[in-house]
Image 1 (tube, rainbow, N blue to C red):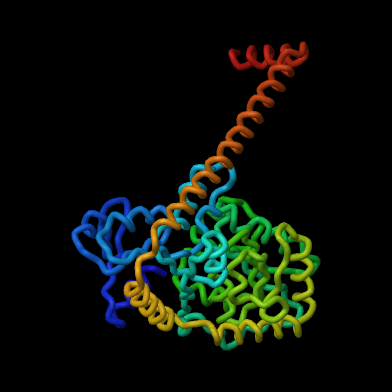
Image 2 (image 1 turned 120 degrees about the horizontal axis):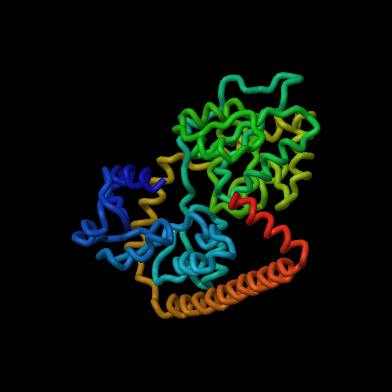
Length: 374
């Protein structure tokens, strides 16, 4: 998405460089050292690990592009990552968000700070309904699950379980960025696809009746939007970014978090009710017709950049106060989590000590040691 913006902005009178904030040189991008040699009108961070470069590159305007709430990507056993990722929300910078949900989430964390929204556009020449995709009577429901199984927040295992919990017949495809890793996960799917370009992904949507995406959170979530353009409705959890496009009962269905049986029930209903499936498909296409094309998003992005460059820089005092509060909160929360882990370890060690002192266990341990020596 970022490369697409950088390549398209030139047509709108904006020259953009893509900069790697860490690592060595790569084709078509600058290193951070090279970027320091240029005075930019604006510098845009795209992920919390790139936020520090906002203040390391000469620029009049500093912008954070919100594609998600970055701290959400880490579990509670990674408090330091949560702390570091959370800091990107508390900077003296302007904000651009890829969804209205992210804009509202930022406003709840930083009262008085409003992010401009530029929705990620779709290549409508590629993602379009196929000439014939209607399911034949008696055929299994063709279900697509999208996401990398190794990313815990994608809910891939729940989605697969929902399909396999159906009473009706289903044909299940898993689309993942790394198909080899997805196959190694050993999930009960009929096939694994992915690691392909947009045209091949559009063909996969064209062979699909419904997309199932049970993420814990998504800043926007592009797979349902792509699927909508191909006439494929979606079953999703209320992961946040879905609110920008999914209307429950009109172009898809919303099920509760961890409600695998509920997702299975809706899949059975879609398999048995072709009229409902057709109505949701028509709703998906109607939503897709209102979604911006890639070129429109690039134009909106260029306009937003110009407006932010002309705007006054944010007052750093409120941002620094918010930053201090965020550090304090995350530090206290992280301390409690580490204490909890320490207590769990001490309790487990105590139980092991108590167990290992029992006569039968001592004898079993001695026998095991003797067998290993022999």
